[in-house]
Length: 81
Image 1: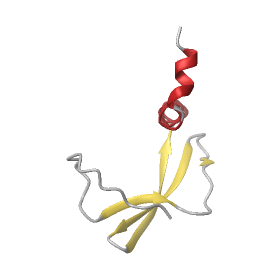
Image 2: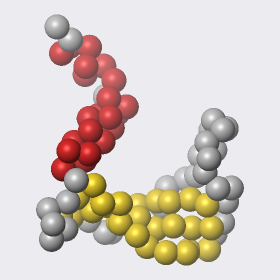
Image 3: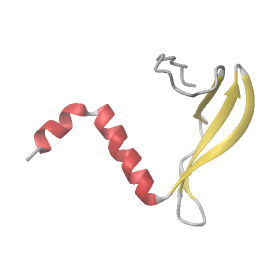
């Protein structure tokens, strides 16, 4: 389970609501060929629903690149031309 982080950035997220990956559930392809990331929605400590985040391949590629930049920021320094 992940830990909730309140960054105080003025986001429009509803207070007390959080979304996290479902432990043990794999990311998978839908019948339409989209990427589905299983998520659980909570209000406070109460589980409200399980829903997938479904992304077309192009959006999943953008998310992958953004996550890579966050996780490995120095990797891009060596690839700049």
